[in-house]
Amino acid sequence: MRTYPFYLVSTPIGNLADITHRAIEILKSVDLVLAEDTRKARTLLSHYGIDVRTQPFHDHNKERLTPSVIERLRGGETIALITDAGTPAISDPGFYIVRALIEAGIEFTAIPGPSAVTQALVLAGFPTDRFAFYGYVPRKKGARDRLIEEAAGAPATAVFFESPHRIVDTLEAIAALLPDREVAMVREATKLHEETVRGTASEIAAHFKGRVRGEVTLLIRGAPRRPGRG
Image 1 (spheres, rainbow, N blue to C red):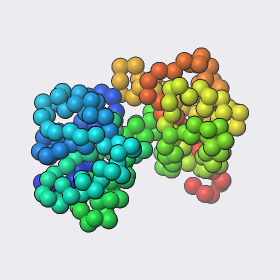
Image 2: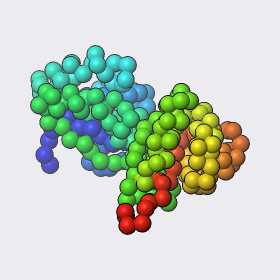
Image 3: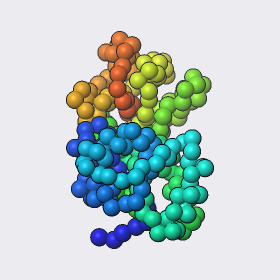
Image 4: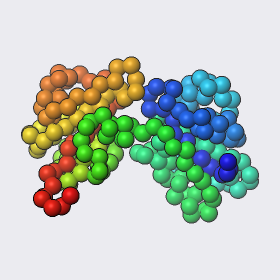
């Protein structure tokens, strides 16, 4: 198997069993693991008996830390990056270091695995031949509503991450803008209390009665496609 100085390693989005043999072997072999939250990383690593140094790498230190990571790689160390859950560089600081590695001419690869985006797409039952991932829903009402309107006009399934504390407000905003559009919400994917709820935004909001717990992925079915446009 070809080796690289840097690896972006996908990790479970909930169930610790959802990790590949290759990911485990890479995490065992590297000199250092960069992690958004080293406490969460240690839970995973300990579960698989992996004894490796860890270092925090997140949005608040990525600009300061990246130059030293590049120097370590140039010095011959091997490093892996993991996110809190899922695939690095999807709505996390992995994208930043990928750009830095490209600019520095350092080779890297990604170890594939779970992603909340693709998991939710499959569970929603909406068309998957075209989809758009919009990341986290903005906190401010104006920006949130503009993003929903943008997604609503596209003939592709829209996928969002949202906080359980704000999801009901977001569902109510979708209900006001798209009262009849199909929506799906996947909660606690791969975990014991996994749940997928489908319906209009108002129906889903009513289902939870204002109380939502756990990780949430929200999907809006794409706009109807014109005949002959696929």
